[in-house]
Amino acid sequence: MLELVGAVSKWAIPVFLAVVLIAGAGRRVRVFEAFVEGAEQGFGMAVKLIPYLVAMVVAISVFRASGAMDSFVGLIAPLLALVGAPAEIVPHALMRPLSGGAALGIAAELIEKHGPDSFIGLLVSTMQGSTDTTFYVLTLYFGAVGVRRYRYAVASGLTADLTTLLASLFIVGLVFGG
Image 1 (cartoon, one colour):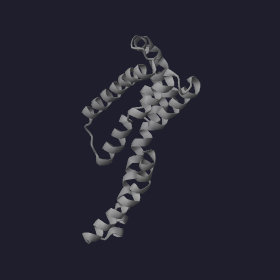
Image 2 (tube, rainbow, N blue to C red; image 1 turned 45 degrees about the vertical axis):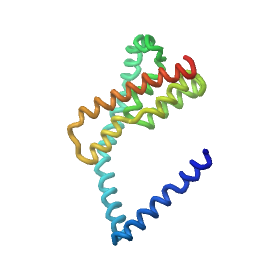
Image 3 (cartoon, rainbow, N blue to C red; image 1 turned 180 degrees about the vertical axis):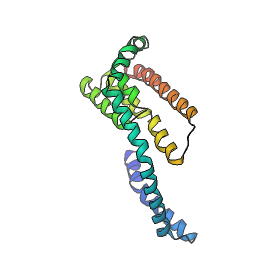
Image 4 (cartoon, one colour; image 1 turned 135 degrees about the vertical axis):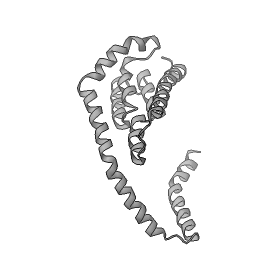
């Protein structure tokens, strides 16, 4: 089964590109010119997004470097103990909605420290694989299309992140014990 999935994965993009080219030719679209025009628009979009990304990276760095994250972890550790969540996962849970790369770095540190088969290692692995970078998505995609009022999206995204944290705790505890 894995070999079939690997073969499909290997050929999916080339086949998709061929289908696009054939469909474009069938509709008499100048495919190469359309591609170049789209690439120009993409470059402009990337330049437009740089301030949003810089602002997000600076905010994350200030949050971590100021010690605010450590203070927050210490503050909520007793509450986490009530639901069986180790306090060590809080930096990952806080960082995951902000930055996938930073969260992955925290997960790697936790896995290295506690082991990949430990409850903490399994929990952060599950959280890493089942959550999204809510603020990154909002910053990047909403900024790209000019959406200014997105408070309900923030609330929905953070609710999904919290739900994922709780579901990860439940499932990892159920499957692997903890």
